[in-house]
Length: 136
Image 1 (cartoon, helix red, strand yellow):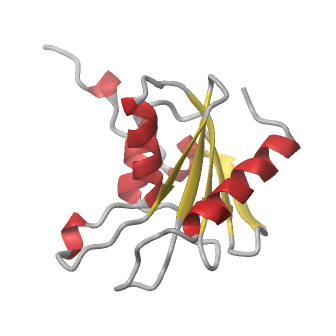
Image 2 (cartoon, one colour):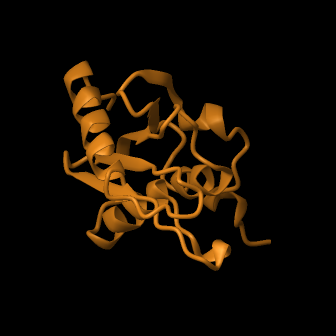
Image 3 (cartoon, one colour):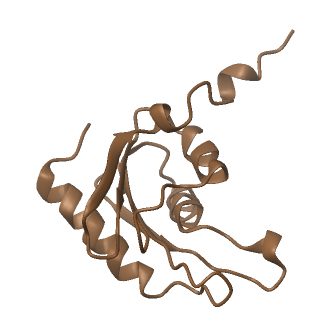
C-alpha cells in the first residue's frame, strides 16, 4: 500500500536524521535510509564504510537487513537521503527487489528535497529474483 504524503515526509525526516550517524570517513558521502514495513514499523540504516572498501555496507541494505532480522518480509516504501539526491546502488536495488518491485523508492537530498519518486521495478527492470530459481 502506497504511503500518504505525511508518511513520505516522516520517512524522509527519519532518513535525514539517521544520515547524521553515518560512518563515511573515506567517501565523505553519508547516506540515510528509512524503510517502511507493511506492518507500519520503520527501520533505519546509515552507510558504514571500512578501510577495506568491499566490506562497506550501504544504508539501504542495513535498513533491509534490520527489518528482516525482526521478521519483516513485506515493505511499502523506502526513503533514501544523500547529499545531492543520489539514487541507490545496484546492490541495494537487487537486495530490495527480493521483496517485490512495487516498493516505492523516494530519493531526497540533505535538505529533504525529493529528487526521485518511483517504483523499484523501474529502477531495476528484469531483476533476478526467486522466480528465476526454478527447478528443472
